[in-house]
Length: 122
Image (cartoon, rainbow, N blue to C red; front, side, top):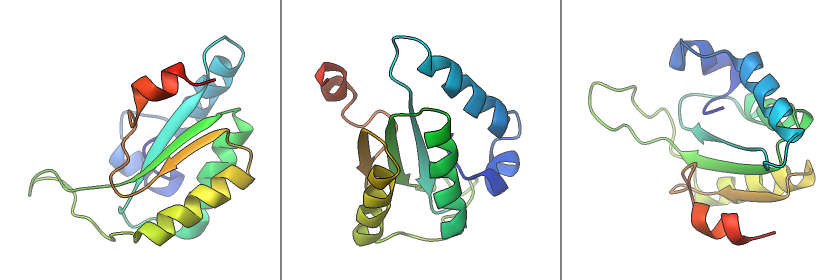
């Protein structure tokens, strides 16, 4: 998903938030474990983050990564907020309480975080 819904159209103009959720729902009906991830630091509100988690859970997403956006070059969007590791821990707890099977949440987490490790876990 990459970002919360209010910022989705601006940051992913070629994408469609609801179509992405539909795709995750379709994957849930297969042998593939649905996984998604998003970045923080674009100016999102906490309510938007919680709503995104709810939307992903409703789409049967079972694994989640949450990471800190880092501005790759001066031409890219600047970071609006750097989240503290305690905030990432709180988001992990919230996501787990919403039913996600596995959550990685931290400033250095990326969508492929421990991908090889997660592949071997049941």
